[in-house]
Length: 215
Image 1 (spheres, rainbow, N blue to C red):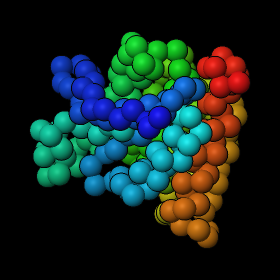
Image 2: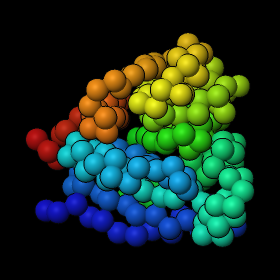
Image 3: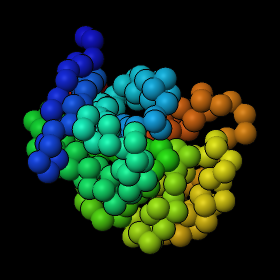
């Protein structure tokens, strides 16, 4: 049976975000792959999603900005580094997943890069009840500095972009719970994909197989 892939409209405040949900058969968790304009690596996200599906983890790919916000941001960069705003979007999307029949009750992971990663970390700190694991990829962790000590979900900081290495090293010392930093010197995008997928598989896919009729 092929994975079920379908578009979704996610309400957040007074606007809707166009998303896509991919549900493997007997999904045991779901990861929000959130993009921010000019920052996402589409090939990387596609590869992360494909690997997650192989582990029985569903994905929700969602741009965190509407078309109008995207146009404004392209001129001003107003939204892409507003981590508090982006955190609100993460929280809204996670709440939507909790209400959706197909994903209700599944552990949720957040994945973001640059400013979006800052938003993911803040969202995890503010609403720990909604998230079970976080991955920050080349994250602007400085944008979440005041919230890092409140993160309870297992957090992985993946760094391939050396300009953000120092802030990520400082960030990992502030997170009190289960956390790790992975510095990618070799392997490029493939290494980022594997580190991300392994973290989510280890921290999210913990439901016994017989609960889903797999054995």
